[in-house]
Amino acid sequence: KKLENKIAELKEKCKDKQKKKEERMDELEKVKHTISDFDGLADKLITWIENQVNGLKNQDPPATSIEDLKDQLKYHNDFTDKVQDDGADLFKDLMKPAQALKSDLLQNDKYVTDKIADLQKAYDNLQRATGERQEELEKAMLDAQNVKDTMDYILPWLVEAEEDLLKEEKPGAELETVLVQLEKQKADQQQLQSHANLIDSLRAQGDTLKDEADKEQLQEILARWDHCKELQDERKELLSTAHDRLQELEELAADLNSFITASEGRVRDSNAQPLVTVDAVEGELDKLKALRDEIEKKSSDLELLNNRGDDYKLLTDPVQAELIDAKLNDINARWNNLLEHLNSSEFWANDATDRLTDLDRQQKLRQAYIEAQNNCDTDSEPNVGSNADSTEDTDISDYGVNTRRRRRKKKASGETSRSEKSDPIRQQDDPKSDPINLPDGPTSMIIDPKASTSDQQQKPSEPSNSVKKTEEVIKGKQPETKKVIKKKKEKSTDCDSALIPLL
Image (cartoon, rainbow, N blue to C red; front, side, top):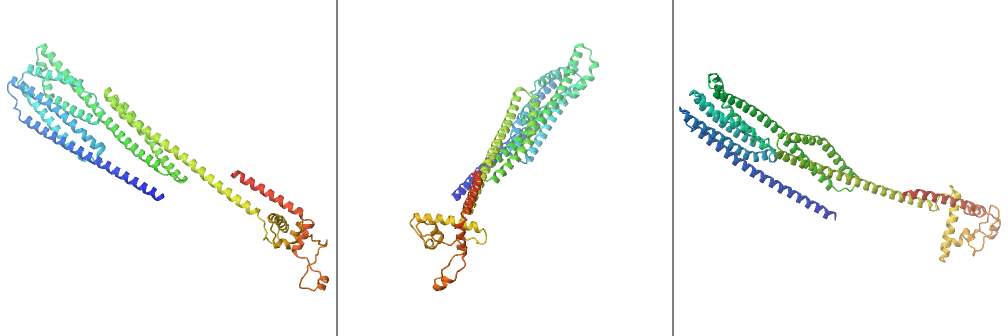
């Protein structure tokens, strides 16, 4: 049976190993597909950036005509907007597998980090090139010294930029979303900064304007420009703060999830151990206590996670806040479930300790009872072969009492032993036998069959020890027998008082 149990245990371990192997293979297959998706999206993005750079280089140089210059500026603005929108979408698609690889699947994310850094550098170079083209066209307009046309061109753009900044979405609930928003904010700020030379030129020419409408238009341009810069700075600070907090939030969440998963495995392993001895149970209790200490230390991280989550919800909109709540609720539910399983394991381990301790106590009591019973039985046996010189009275009394008991049993069965026929004490107790009339004196005659009749009549012999003992028993030692029996009864009472508590 033990061998069968061992074989079943080994088979179960083999199944667990095979299951873990299959899970690992699935995980590696998932990593393989994720890396493949990431590489495909990265190649798509770098190809798109190269195409945009080539399209920017193929644009015509600034025109000399104001109308043509306006057309070039409009075309370039549309080109810049498209670059920002398409680039944001491509980066958003890329960041999903990148974040999965960095957070969940790869221990070393250097490959992913370096790849994203190269793509961001190429995208920043494209943004810088579009800004330089913008500055070139606006400089050509300033060189035409047509302030009115310049103000008519820049004011609509500032109005649209201001509206876009006011309508910008709040930080998302996912780190990759915030990273894409940061990239877009950086591109918008570069585009805004590309108009700085034109605004500075208009500001310097403000004193030359004579028409009040032109002066009001210029004041509006300058006010919107300052407001756009202020909104951009606020947007940058908001997204930077959101990125740092969300990154900390996700790192805390990942660390807690990993800790909870490992702790759940430790609890399962503890529950799988056979609790057959007190030492084994106490060993498992020590492990569970160590785990509880770790959980208590880790509870500060859970509290920090909840606090950071509540702070981050203030930075985003209600829809994104619900996503943050869902993440926090999931981790808190896993945490509470872990505590419940730990409490249950500790309860059953303590219960097993109590039960096994009680079993050990009962076993010890049972063994003590058996030993005490054996000792009492040993003490109650007759000490027939004891030394005659010690405890003579007790030996004689025991001998007389037990002899009569044995004789009565044999008489009841109809048996008569040779010793009973020759033993004067037994004949004395037997009413059917002839009584032996011994003299009252301290001596008695011992008849020697080898001696002559005259010698037997003339030579008295000294009484033997057995005869002496017989005389003592007959003449006055019966009270000693009762005394010994009383002592035995007292000893029996003592045994009972020792055995009853054990029972």
